[in-house]
Length: 102
Image 1: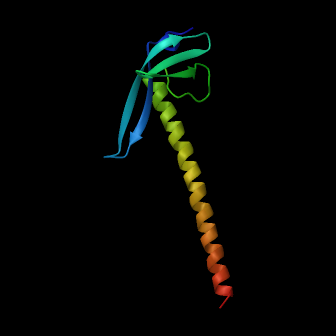
Image 2: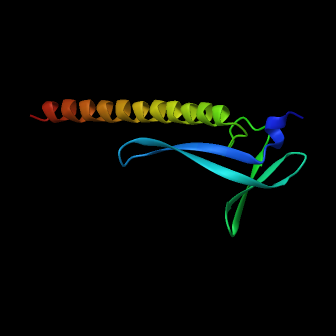
Image 3: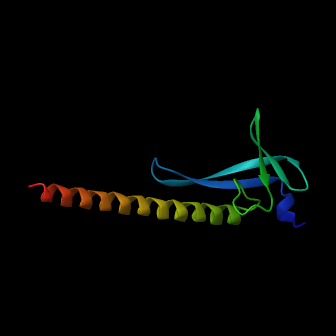
């Protein structure tokens, strides 16, 4: 097991819209298990994260957390581009139908 997987801190990046800035969240490891870690999110809330999961809520290193953030945002962008394309197609269809009604 590498040191990164038993790190006492795990990280997650998120974008905040006020001034568009990148924020890093740092979580303490409350407990480790053979399959993952329990992260202390707040005083009364813990979150379990699988170590070997393809997508993880948080990562054992800042570099992995930033790579995870980039992957999430790239996926988000692909989804939003698809939505825009569908909206544009529905607008074009409605305009065509409107013109044929004249």
